[in-house]
Length: 72
Image (cartoon, one colour):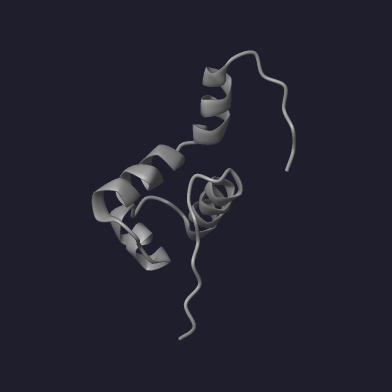
């Protein structure tokens, strides 16, 4: 994980929440609870597959969400 020097806590929050889709992804999780990838695509039809994947990975790396893989 990359270490970044910041002046205040607000900077950390903005770094973690930055991006067009992260607030919408977190809002979807709050409203609908645990979801599968397809469910996110259903709730946010404007987002591309690649953008959703990248945003979810960043949120996971920042510790804001946890990913669970189920064997099927």
